[in-house]
Length: 304
Length: 283
Image 1 (cartoon, chains in turn cyan, green):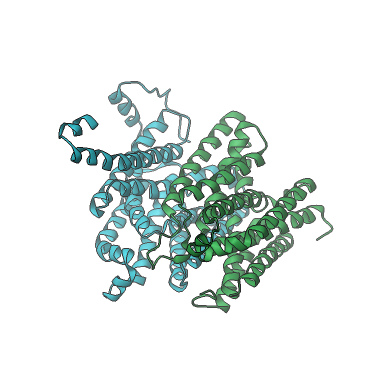
Image 2 (cartoon, helix red, strand yellow):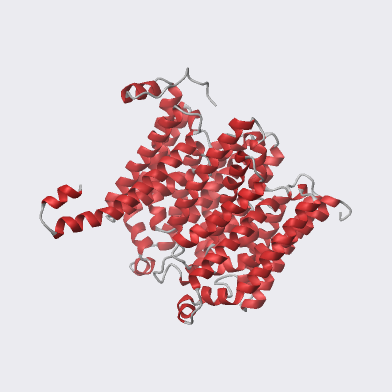
């Protein structure tokens, strides 16, 4: 944990609160790094939900645990461990998925990959010894310890994820929605699917450095699920997903600054609140629209 | 090796937990609910932490959380069955729902972890580590007997549910038309899976439960096409993985037992894929 700032107090003056948060360099870094991570996770997570690969995403998130433990054991920077294990996991899942015919067999294979990776992680931790005291940090990450160099790294990762998805977005979406038709039209479905898993692995590796492997999933799933509940148009919901993820990370960080609970908790809780809100909005909106269309125009105003 | 009491306890508790995992896992793989099973394993963690924060027995929190989550997934998931697969356009077990529910619960886990460590200073990390990775060599004789009894009870319940559950999993529409309560069965199965998850998270840990649930069962589905034989094989492979893992961990002291068990289960699945490459034995 970084040094405790002198008694942060939440007041009703929002501008004052924000200024108070921005006074500290580590908070600025956390906001910048968190923002980059939010963009990468929202983009990759959106495509992940469209492809119904949440379980694969979760498993890649878990790869961060053996990755960090292996890096600690080998004495290299944790980022290398995250990256190599996430990439290896993505390749393993891709290989299993390509050869397993039935969908249920695929999930079973992913489950085995995850269990084995966690088992390895536990082995590394017990071989290393002493890390167990910091198990909490390993599992839940430390958003408040982002260095200047890490901010640049995270921004580069976010840029790479965005570029990859925009370059391959159209055929990937086609292959995700209707793999048979896409295959018949000459889209390389197998290679796209393996490539997407690698991109997802990259996004997850970056995210889990700051949120920890257990809560990566909050940033991958919740903003995208909320955005997809709000609108069915691909570009609009993709943009909404990024916006919600940014909002979630920044509000979560801001709240955690004024409290004893860790940022990971606030980020996940705010993300969940955003999802619930989106679902409520999605449920209420058609009723409002129907009422507006049904009778006299002022009804819309009343309903709002 | 059998001269040590802790090894005997580990084998007694572990065998029944593994048998329950293997048999339940066979249905989990058949129904495409591996993600749900995984989520239940993670739910055990906030449950145990909440109980620890409240100062009651961890096991109460474990069972309450996993059974409740199993029920919630069954209710929210519209009884989703993935057997029809992705290509045919059917919804594969609503993974967005599971993902959202389970992230929310993990966030609660962080909350309780912080609360607990603020309250009692230390100890929290140890509870977290135990719930996550288990401590099969640390079971007392009483705990081992209790675990074995719960494992046996799950197996008996599953034997009672087995026939209609198989029908409802393979051909849900036909089963529904014949008057089989498919939704109720789906609910009961996930609740049962919750009990298994809570029990297994004590023996092999919440995070490693998945290995015993998915590995042996997926291998059995690949190796044998006949339902009865394949189910029996899943149970046998799970128990075999546990024994193999425990023996391995006993022989190599630096190898944690949870790791050894999951490594053996993974090896079993990898072998099954090698023996029966390609599409798998089923349909």
